[in-house]
Image (cartoon, rainbow, N blue to C red; front, side, top):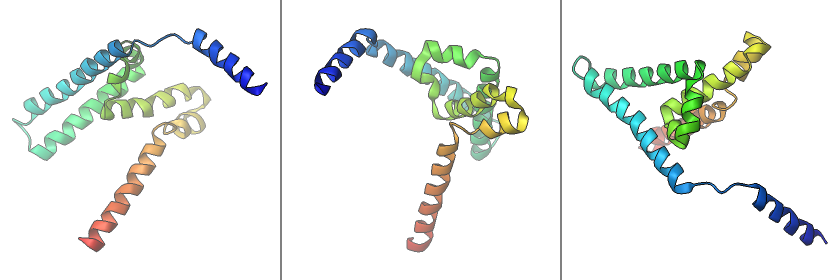
Amino acid sequence: MKQNKNQEYSKMVEQASPNSPIFTNCLKAFFSGGFICGIGQLLIIWLEKSFTADETALLVSAILIVASAILTGLGIYEKLGKVCGAGTIVPITGFANSVVSPAIEFKKEGYVLGMAAKMFLLAGPVIVYGTLSSMIIGLMYYFIG
């Protein structure tokens, strides 16, 4: 009896769920992510004439983060995400978007209990994992290497 209901449910889900154009989505993600990375590379080429390699890397990261945050705040990044798909979650711009989006969404609840408290809702686990894993690797490197 239970298997019959599961099969019926599976059929209903299959009929209701649209097929995803995987190839088209992959192409959109490839080109949009490549475009974002291309902008980053152009910034590197332009800035390395005036700054050291470390300063250039820092500036390019900061520019991409700020641009992503501004585009998210203006509602443009969400529209780009709908058109471009997964290509917009290139690590640095996608991470900035994941911090700013919840902050904007919960701004109505106030600056402290809404925006500040919910800002790292999506990005928090990434920060915790990155910090913890880098500490473990650092300690291993210190004691073993």
